[in-house]
View 1 (cartoon, rainbow, N blue to C red):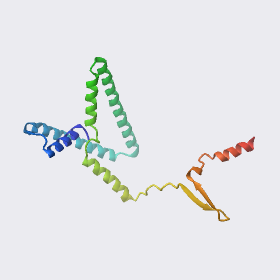
View 2 (cartoon, helix red, strand yellow):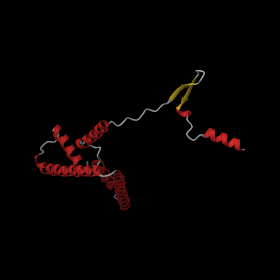
View 3 (spheres, rainbow, N blue to C red):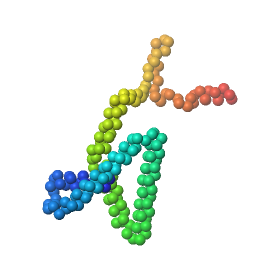
View 4 (spheres, rainbow, N blue to C red):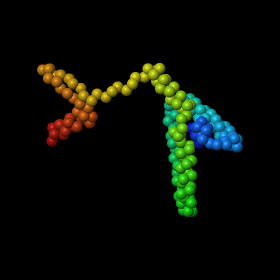
Length: 173
């Protein structure tokens, strides 16, 4: 969502509860925040449309590049913090960086567009009729020729065939 969108949402909540007296001088600042939030929202929507138009291989590459860029930003932030601490102003730099990260966090406030996109994605899965994951069988009861029940559980399954390998080893010795 971004910094300005979160600030806009916080501003709207504050205005909703009318807890700020004499807001009229700040109206110009509020308009700039709203304009920047709209730009962020449009940029995010265009990015989402571009991502949805990519092939599966391109989506994987796109996500990899996004992770790399995020890690590079974090690495730069760590370098800035270390440089600030070496110069004696580390704590204010670290605090400012954390405040910026918190305000730019997408989970800070509710985004209707992201919510609608998730709902459309889930409805698309339902419309396609994709089967739900089959529940795991924790136990299974079968009967032998004499009618005695034989219970096999999830942990009875030997994925590496260890018993068979052991018997083969013992036969070979």
